[in-house]
Image (cartoon, rainbow, N blue to C red; front, side, top):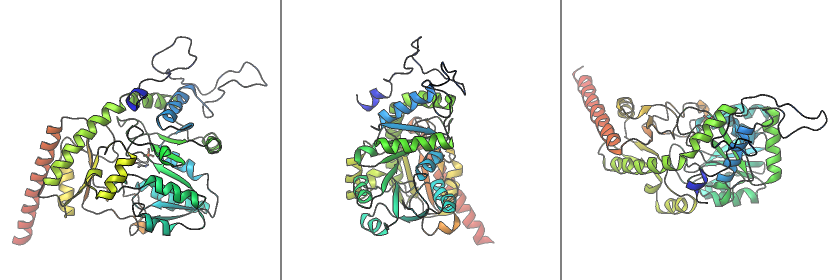
Amino acid sequence: MKPATRLVHFDPCPRDPYRAVATPIYQTATFEQESATELGRYDYSRSGNPTRTVLEDQLAALENATRAFCFASGLAAIGAVARLLRPGDEILAGDDLYGGTCRLFSRVLARSGIKVRYADASDLQGFRKAAGQQTRLIHVESPTNPMLRIVDIGALAELAHRSNALLCVDNSLMSPYLQNPLDLGADIVVHSGTKFLCGHSDVTAGVVAVKDRSLAEDLYLVQNGEGAVLGPFDSYLLLRGMKTMGIRIDRQQANARRVAEYLVRHRLVTRVHYPSFADRRAREVHARQARGDGSVVSFETGSTELTRRVAESTRFFDLTVSFGSVNSSINVPSRMSHASIPSDMRSVVVVPPDLVRLSVGIEDPDDLIADLARAFASASRESVAADALAKTN
Ligand SMILES: *Cc1c(COP(=O)(O)O)cnc(C)c1O
Protein backbone atom coordinates (compact mmCIF):
# COMPACT_ATOMS: atom_id res chain seq x y z
CA MET A 1 0.00 0.00 0.00
CA LYS A 2 1.15 3.53 -0.78
CA PRO A 3 1.10 5.97 2.19
CA ALA A 4 -2.17 7.69 1.19
CA THR A 5 -4.00 4.36 1.00
CA ARG A 6 -2.58 3.07 4.24
CA LEU A 7 -3.93 6.14 6.05
CA VAL A 8 -7.51 4.98 5.54
CA HIS A 9 -7.14 1.21 5.11
CA PHE A 10 -6.55 -0.49 8.45
CA ASP A 11 -8.66 -2.61 10.77
CA PRO A 12 -10.53 0.00 12.89
CA CYS A 13 -11.73 -2.50 15.51
CA PRO A 14 -10.16 -5.97 15.50
CA ARG A 15 -12.52 -8.70 16.77
CA ASP A 16 -15.37 -6.22 17.30
CA PRO A 17 -18.64 -8.20 16.97
CA TYR A 18 -20.51 -5.28 15.32
CA ARG A 19 -17.76 -4.48 12.78
CA ALA A 20 -17.88 -0.71 13.32
CA VAL A 21 -16.10 1.22 10.57
CA ALA A 22 -14.74 3.83 12.98
CA THR A 23 -12.77 2.81 16.06
CA PRO A 24 -14.98 2.65 19.17
CA ILE A 25 -13.82 4.68 22.17
CA TYR A 26 -13.24 2.20 25.00
CA GLN A 27 -13.63 4.80 27.73
CA THR A 28 -12.95 2.40 30.56
CA ALA A 29 -10.18 2.11 33.13
CA THR A 30 -10.47 -1.61 33.84
CA PHE A 31 -11.64 -4.80 32.10
CA GLU A 32 -13.39 -7.69 33.84
CA GLN A 33 -11.46 -10.96 33.83
CA GLU A 34 -12.83 -14.48 33.25
CA SER A 35 -10.29 -16.11 35.50
CA ALA A 36 -8.43 -15.07 38.64
CA THR A 37 -5.22 -16.65 37.43
CA GLU A 38 -5.10 -15.86 33.72
CA LEU A 39 -5.56 -12.29 32.54
CA GLY A 40 -7.27 -11.52 29.25
CA ARG A 41 -5.88 -9.32 26.45
CA TYR A 42 -6.75 -6.16 28.41
CA ASP A 43 -6.95 -5.69 32.15
CA TYR A 44 -6.21 -2.03 32.91
CA SER A 45 -6.07 0.95 30.52
CA ARG A 46 -2.62 2.18 31.59
CA SER A 47 -1.24 -1.19 30.48
CA GLY A 48 -3.35 -1.38 27.34
CA ASN A 49 -6.60 -0.08 25.88
CA PRO A 50 -8.25 -1.29 22.64
CA THR A 51 -8.66 2.23 21.18
CA ARG A 52 -5.01 3.01 21.89
CA THR A 53 -3.93 -0.33 20.44
CA VAL A 54 -5.57 0.42 17.07
CA LEU A 55 -3.77 3.78 17.03
CA GLU A 56 -0.43 2.26 18.04
CA ASP A 57 -0.70 -0.48 15.42
CA GLN A 58 -1.57 2.03 12.72
CA LEU A 59 1.37 4.27 13.69
CA ALA A 60 3.72 1.27 13.70
CA ALA A 61 2.50 0.44 10.17
CA LEU A 62 2.97 4.05 8.99
CA GLU A 63 6.55 4.20 10.32
CA ASN A 64 7.45 0.65 9.21
CA ALA A 65 8.07 -0.18 12.87
CA THR A 66 7.32 -3.38 14.75
CA ARG A 67 5.69 -1.46 17.59
CA ALA A 68 4.59 2.05 18.47
CA PHE A 69 3.65 3.53 21.84
CA CYS A 70 1.41 6.53 22.42
CA PHE A 71 1.93 9.05 25.19
CA ALA A 72 0.10 12.04 26.60
CA SER A 73 2.40 14.47 24.76
CA GLY A 74 5.43 14.60 22.50
CA LEU A 75 7.64 15.49 25.44
CA ALA A 76 6.33 12.51 27.44
CA ALA A 77 7.35 10.35 24.45
CA ILE A 78 10.86 11.85 24.33
CA GLY A 79 11.08 11.51 28.12
CA ALA A 80 10.26 7.79 27.79
CA VAL A 81 13.14 7.36 25.31
CA ALA A 82 15.47 9.13 27.74
CA ARG A 83 14.47 6.55 30.38
CA LEU A 84 16.51 4.01 28.42
CA LEU A 85 19.64 5.82 29.66
CA ARG A 86 21.53 5.43 32.94
CA PRO A 87 23.27 8.01 35.13
CA GLY A 88 26.57 8.98 33.52
CA ASP A 89 25.30 8.33 29.99
CA GLU A 90 25.38 11.19 27.53
CA ILE A 91 22.96 12.45 24.92
CA LEU A 92 24.39 14.12 21.85
CA ALA A 93 21.65 16.33 20.44
CA GLY A 94 21.32 18.54 17.39
CA ASP A 95 21.64 22.21 18.31
CA ASP A 96 18.56 23.37 16.42
CA LEU A 97 16.01 21.64 18.56
CA TYR A 98 12.46 22.06 19.78
CA GLY A 99 12.75 24.32 22.87
CA GLY A 100 10.88 21.94 25.17
CA THR A 101 13.22 19.07 24.25
CA CYS A 102 16.17 21.27 25.14
CA ARG A 103 14.60 22.10 28.52
CA LEU A 104 13.88 18.40 29.17
CA PHE A 105 17.46 17.40 28.31
CA SER A 106 19.30 20.25 30.05
CA ARG A 107 17.17 20.82 33.14
CA VAL A 108 15.08 17.74 33.89
CA LEU A 109 17.42 14.91 32.87
CA ALA A 110 20.39 16.69 34.44
CA ARG A 111 18.80 15.81 37.79
CA SER A 112 19.19 12.10 37.13
CA GLY A 113 22.85 12.40 36.15
CA ILE A 114 22.37 12.31 32.39
CA LYS A 115 24.56 14.72 30.48
CA VAL A 116 23.79 16.36 27.19
CA ARG A 117 25.92 18.00 24.52
CA TYR A 118 24.65 19.95 21.56
CA ALA A 119 26.22 20.30 18.12
CA ASP A 120 25.10 21.21 14.62
CA ALA A 121 23.86 17.88 13.25
CA SER A 122 23.75 19.24 9.68
CA ASP A 123 27.57 19.51 9.84
CA LEU A 124 28.58 15.84 9.85
CA GLN A 125 32.26 16.31 10.62
CA GLY A 126 31.69 18.68 13.51
CA PHE A 127 28.93 16.49 14.90
CA ARG A 128 31.15 13.40 14.72
CA LYS A 129 33.80 15.20 16.76
CA ALA A 130 31.24 16.10 19.41
CA ALA A 131 30.40 12.43 20.11
CA GLY A 132 32.03 11.21 23.32
CA GLN A 133 32.86 7.90 24.99
CA GLN A 134 29.67 8.04 27.05
CA THR A 135 27.33 9.00 24.19
CA ARG A 136 24.48 6.48 24.25
CA LEU A 137 21.75 8.43 22.49
CA ILE A 138 21.89 10.74 19.49
CA HIS A 139 18.77 12.86 19.16
CA VAL A 140 18.06 14.97 16.07
CA GLU A 141 15.29 16.51 13.99
CA SER A 142 15.36 16.79 10.18
CA PRO A 143 14.57 19.29 8.84
CA THR A 144 15.47 21.10 12.05
CA ASN A 145 13.05 23.49 13.63
CA PRO A 146 12.96 26.47 13.23
CA MET A 147 16.02 26.80 10.92
CA LEU A 148 14.96 24.00 8.51
CA ARG A 149 18.50 22.61 8.24
CA ILE A 150 18.85 19.13 6.75
CA VAL A 151 20.43 16.34 8.77
CA ASP A 152 21.71 13.18 7.04
CA ILE A 153 19.83 10.50 8.99
CA GLY A 154 21.61 7.51 7.40
CA ALA A 155 25.06 8.95 8.13
CA LEU A 156 24.09 9.65 11.75
CA ALA A 157 22.74 6.10 12.13
CA GLU A 158 26.19 4.82 11.12
CA LEU A 159 27.88 7.18 13.56
CA ALA A 160 25.54 6.08 16.37
CA HIS A 161 26.05 2.40 15.73
CA ARG A 162 29.83 2.71 15.56
CA SER A 163 29.71 4.41 18.98
CA ASN A 164 27.34 1.87 20.54
CA ALA A 165 24.62 4.50 20.73
CA LEU A 166 21.01 4.67 19.55
CA LEU A 167 19.80 7.18 16.98
CA CYS A 168 16.46 8.82 17.79
CA VAL A 169 14.84 11.06 15.16
CA ASP A 170 12.07 13.49 16.06
CA ASN A 171 9.94 13.27 12.90
CA SER A 172 7.23 15.74 13.98
CA LEU A 173 7.98 18.29 11.27
CA MET A 174 7.72 15.79 8.40
CA SER A 175 5.16 13.25 9.70
CA PRO A 176 5.26 9.58 8.62
CA TYR A 177 3.54 10.64 5.38
CA LEU A 178 6.71 12.40 4.20
CA GLN A 179 9.61 10.67 5.96
CA ASN A 180 10.34 7.33 7.67
CA PRO A 181 13.54 7.55 9.74
CA LEU A 182 13.54 3.84 10.72
CA ASP A 183 13.95 2.94 7.03
CA LEU A 184 17.02 5.18 6.92
CA GLY A 185 18.69 3.38 9.83
CA ALA A 186 17.39 5.25 12.87
CA ASP A 187 16.62 3.06 15.91
CA ILE A 188 13.82 5.18 17.32
CA VAL A 189 11.37 7.64 15.80
CA VAL A 190 9.38 10.04 17.97
CA HIS A 191 6.52 12.38 17.13
CA SER A 192 4.68 15.16 18.74
CA GLY A 193 1.27 13.84 17.67
CA THR A 194 -0.02 17.31 18.57
CA LYS A 195 1.21 18.51 15.17
CA PHE A 196 0.52 16.81 11.80
CA LEU A 197 -0.84 13.51 13.13
CA CYS A 198 -3.67 15.34 14.87
CA GLY A 199 -3.78 18.20 12.36
CA HIS A 200 -6.52 20.17 14.07
CA SER A 201 -4.82 21.61 17.19
CA ASP A 202 -7.21 19.80 19.52
CA VAL A 203 -5.10 17.02 21.09
CA THR A 204 -1.68 16.82 22.71
CA ALA A 205 -0.11 13.44 22.04
CA GLY A 206 3.25 11.75 21.59
CA VAL A 207 4.53 8.66 19.78
CA VAL A 208 7.60 6.45 20.01
CA ALA A 209 8.10 3.77 17.33
CA VAL A 210 10.88 1.19 16.96
CA LYS A 211 11.81 -1.82 14.82
CA ASP A 212 13.89 -3.72 17.38
CA ARG A 213 11.83 -6.06 19.57
CA SER A 214 13.94 -5.85 22.71
CA LEU A 215 13.93 -2.05 22.47
CA ALA A 216 10.13 -2.28 22.14
CA GLU A 217 9.95 -4.31 25.34
CA ASP A 218 12.07 -1.76 27.21
CA LEU A 219 9.81 1.03 25.98
CA TYR A 220 6.66 -0.84 26.95
CA LEU A 221 8.09 -1.24 30.45
CA VAL A 222 8.56 2.55 30.62
CA GLN A 223 5.13 3.32 29.12
CA ASN A 224 3.30 1.02 31.53
CA GLY A 225 5.68 1.62 34.44
CA GLU A 226 5.46 5.42 34.36
CA GLY A 227 1.98 5.67 32.89
CA ALA A 228 2.10 8.84 30.77
CA VAL A 229 -0.26 7.14 28.33
CA LEU A 230 -2.65 8.65 25.79
CA GLY A 231 -6.28 8.34 26.87
CA PRO A 232 -8.96 6.54 24.81
CA PHE A 233 -10.75 9.69 23.60
CA ASP A 234 -7.53 11.40 22.52
CA SER A 235 -6.48 8.16 20.80
CA TYR A 236 -9.75 8.24 18.87
CA LEU A 237 -9.25 11.89 17.87
CA LEU A 238 -5.77 11.12 16.60
CA LEU A 239 -7.04 8.12 14.59
CA ARG A 240 -9.71 10.33 13.07
CA GLY A 241 -7.25 13.13 12.28
CA MET A 242 -4.71 10.80 10.69
CA LYS A 243 -7.16 9.58 8.04
CA THR A 244 -6.97 12.96 6.30
CA MET A 245 -3.25 13.49 6.93
CA GLY A 246 -2.35 12.78 3.29
CA ILE A 247 -4.65 15.33 1.69
CA ARG A 248 -3.99 17.84 4.45
CA ILE A 249 -0.24 17.61 3.98
CA ASP A 250 -0.44 17.62 0.15
CA ARG A 251 -2.46 20.82 0.27
CA GLN A 252 -0.41 22.44 3.05
CA GLN A 253 2.79 21.65 1.20
CA ALA A 254 1.54 23.10 -2.09
CA ASN A 255 0.45 26.25 -0.23
CA ALA A 256 3.79 26.44 1.62
CA ARG A 257 5.67 26.33 -1.67
CA ARG A 258 3.64 29.28 -3.00
CA VAL A 259 4.26 31.21 0.23
CA ALA A 260 7.99 30.42 0.22
CA GLU A 261 8.31 31.57 -3.41
CA TYR A 262 6.48 34.78 -2.53
CA LEU A 263 8.77 35.41 0.45
CA VAL A 264 11.97 34.86 -1.55
CA ARG A 265 10.96 37.74 -3.85
CA HIS A 266 9.85 40.11 -1.06
CA ARG A 267 12.09 43.16 -0.56
CA LEU A 268 11.65 43.13 3.24
CA VAL A 269 12.74 39.48 3.56
CA THR A 270 16.47 38.88 3.92
CA ARG A 271 16.48 35.03 4.04
CA VAL A 272 13.99 32.22 3.56
CA HIS A 273 14.53 28.79 5.13
CA TYR A 274 12.81 25.94 3.28
CA PRO A 275 14.31 22.59 2.17
CA SER A 276 14.13 23.43 -1.57
CA PHE A 277 16.06 26.63 -0.98
CA ALA A 278 18.90 24.98 0.95
CA ASP A 279 22.34 24.45 -0.63
CA ARG A 280 22.76 21.66 -3.16
CA ARG A 281 24.20 19.05 -0.82
CA ALA A 282 21.42 19.57 1.72
CA ARG A 283 18.78 19.45 -1.03
CA GLU A 284 20.17 16.13 -2.24
CA VAL A 285 20.20 14.61 1.24
CA HIS A 286 16.64 15.76 1.85
CA ALA A 287 15.40 14.48 -1.53
CA ARG A 288 16.93 11.08 -0.73
CA GLN A 289 15.30 10.75 2.68
CA ALA A 290 11.94 12.56 2.40
CA ARG A 291 8.99 12.71 0.02
CA GLY A 292 8.49 16.49 0.14
CA ASP A 293 9.41 19.77 1.78
CA GLY A 294 6.56 19.94 4.28
CA SER A 295 4.68 23.08 5.20
CA VAL A 296 6.83 24.90 7.73
CA VAL A 297 8.70 27.89 6.29
CA SER A 298 10.80 30.37 8.22
CA PHE A 299 12.30 33.69 7.20
CA GLU A 300 14.35 36.60 8.49
CA THR A 301 13.70 40.31 8.03
CA GLY A 302 16.90 41.80 9.46
CA SER A 303 14.81 43.72 12.04
CA THR A 304 13.41 42.38 15.30
CA GLU A 305 10.88 45.22 15.36
CA LEU A 306 9.63 44.54 11.82
CA THR A 307 9.40 40.83 12.62
CA ARG A 308 7.26 41.52 15.68
CA ARG A 309 4.97 43.86 13.73
CA VAL A 310 4.53 41.42 10.84
CA ALA A 311 3.70 38.60 13.25
CA GLU A 312 1.14 40.78 15.01
CA SER A 313 -0.46 42.06 11.78
CA THR A 314 -1.57 38.91 9.95
CA ARG A 315 -5.21 37.90 9.91
CA PHE A 316 -5.21 34.36 8.54
CA PHE A 317 -1.97 33.32 10.21
CA ASP A 318 -2.90 32.94 13.87
CA LEU A 319 -0.23 34.12 16.29
CA THR A 320 0.36 30.80 18.06
CA VAL A 321 3.12 28.35 18.85
CA SER A 322 2.85 24.86 17.35
CA PHE A 323 2.52 23.86 13.69
CA GLY A 324 0.90 21.24 11.50
CA SER A 325 -2.72 22.33 11.87
CA VAL A 326 -5.24 22.97 9.08
CA ASN A 327 -5.10 26.63 10.14
CA SER A 328 -2.04 28.68 9.21
CA SER A 329 -0.03 30.07 12.08
CA ILE A 330 2.79 32.56 12.60
CA ASN A 331 5.29 32.59 15.43
CA VAL A 332 8.45 34.42 16.51
CA PRO A 333 10.49 31.43 17.77
CA SER A 334 12.99 33.42 19.86
CA ARG A 335 10.08 34.86 21.88
CA MET A 336 7.48 32.09 21.62
CA SER A 337 8.00 28.43 20.66
CA HIS A 338 11.70 28.43 21.61
CA ALA A 339 11.47 30.70 24.66
CA SER A 340 11.68 27.56 26.83
CA ILE A 341 15.34 27.15 25.90
CA PRO A 342 17.16 27.70 29.23
CA SER A 343 18.92 31.10 29.28
CA ASP A 344 22.36 29.56 29.80
CA MET A 345 21.79 27.54 26.62
CA ARG A 346 21.10 30.52 24.38
CA SER A 347 24.70 30.63 23.20
CA VAL A 348 24.48 26.99 22.05
CA VAL A 349 20.99 26.86 20.63
CA VAL A 350 20.88 29.98 18.52
CA VAL A 351 17.59 31.23 17.11
CA PRO A 352 17.88 34.57 15.27
CA PRO A 353 15.73 37.19 17.05
CA ASP A 354 14.29 38.42 13.72
CA LEU A 355 13.20 34.93 12.61
CA VAL A 356 9.54 34.32 11.76
CA ARG A 357 8.21 30.76 11.50
CA LEU A 358 5.11 30.04 9.46
CA SER A 359 3.07 26.88 9.51
CA VAL A 360 1.03 26.95 6.33
CA GLY A 361 -2.50 25.54 6.49
CA ILE A 362 -5.10 24.44 3.97
CA GLU A 363 -6.65 27.87 3.26
CA ASP A 364 -6.75 29.33 -0.25
CA PRO A 365 -3.13 30.28 -1.02
CA ASP A 366 -4.17 33.59 -2.61
CA ASP A 367 -5.71 34.67 0.70
CA LEU A 368 -2.55 33.66 2.57
CA ILE A 369 -0.26 35.62 0.26
CA ALA A 370 -2.54 38.67 0.26
CA ASP A 371 -2.56 38.48 4.07
CA LEU A 372 1.23 38.44 4.26
CA ALA A 373 1.44 41.32 1.77
CA ARG A 374 -0.93 43.37 3.93
CA ALA A 375 0.98 42.51 7.10
CA PHE A 376 4.35 43.52 5.56
CA ALA A 377 2.87 46.77 4.27
CA SER A 378 1.32 47.77 7.57
CA ALA A 379 4.38 46.65 9.58
CA SER A 380 6.76 48.68 7.41
CA ARG A 381 4.45 51.76 7.52
CA GLU A 382 4.52 51.53 11.31
CA SER A 383 8.30 51.15 11.28
CA VAL A 384 8.71 54.26 9.07
CA ALA A 385 6.35 56.22 11.33
CA ALA A 386 8.24 55.08 14.45
CA ASP A 387 11.58 56.09 12.88
CA ALA A 388 10.22 59.52 11.93
CA LEU A 389 8.90 60.01 15.44
CA ALA A 390 12.25 59.02 16.94
CA LYS A 391 13.97 61.62 14.70
CA THR A 392 11.63 64.50 15.58
CA ASN A 393 12.01 63.71 19.29
C1 LIG B 1 5.81 20.24 19.69
C2 LIG B 1 7.05 19.46 19.54
C3 LIG B 1 7.49 18.59 20.54
C4 LIG B 1 6.77 18.46 21.87
O1 LIG B 1 5.53 17.89 21.70
P1 LIG B 1 4.31 18.17 22.74
O2 LIG B 1 3.23 17.36 22.16
O3 LIG B 1 4.08 19.64 22.70
O4 LIG B 1 4.78 17.72 24.07
C5 LIG B 1 8.62 17.85 20.31
N1 LIG B 1 9.32 17.97 19.15
C6 LIG B 1 8.94 18.80 18.17
C7 LIG B 1 9.73 18.88 16.92
C8 LIG B 1 7.80 19.58 18.33
O5 LIG B 1 7.45 20.43 17.37
